[in-house]
Image (cartoon, rainbow, N blue to C red; front, top):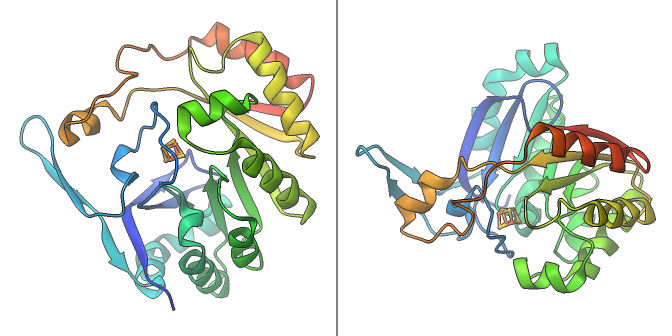
Length: 255
Ligand code: SF4
């Protein structure tokens, strides 16, 4: 079974899907969103970050699916009682589709559901690899403007929307996740266009993921510029206004 390059495993997370979950963050991403709060996942290389105050943390370990399953299944009773499970995030987890499929299969055999949190800018075949073992997806939709998407992330929006459409058509449970980033996609027009795009892809569930700066310390430790360091998180009124717009098109919640 293919090994996985794991950045970190977070236990008892409640923000990455229903119930109590473990989130397995994989290393490596093919986009470069400047607001990313997991900059340590940009590369598959192992990195030891030294934070202010001297605390160190190493991100990056090659693990087998069995090793990961053993780690996360320690919390299996919590998943059962809360309707939770395991979320595979990143980075871009779909870049390790074979390993993710192996992990999800193993977890499924133990009665644990896997949810994938993806930005979706990969060949659709990667989704076909995981699809037999993964029913639920959180699928990022960052903008409806193809040029802006490429400028900001280096990715191709058509690939993303095509994958979203095909994944929904496959019968998977898909929630579009909109990172709500001031200065990027919070205008009324942005909201309308993104909502229309989501509906055009056949998706009816979405959530707004408000921008935050919790990744700032990692940028500092990595010695790379954090272009959003002075961007404030969106306020409640702006989020609620955006949710009202989205609500005309899709079932929307604010995370
Ligand atoms: S796709 Fe996600 S992990 Fe990759 S750079 Fe963008 S925000 Fe970060």
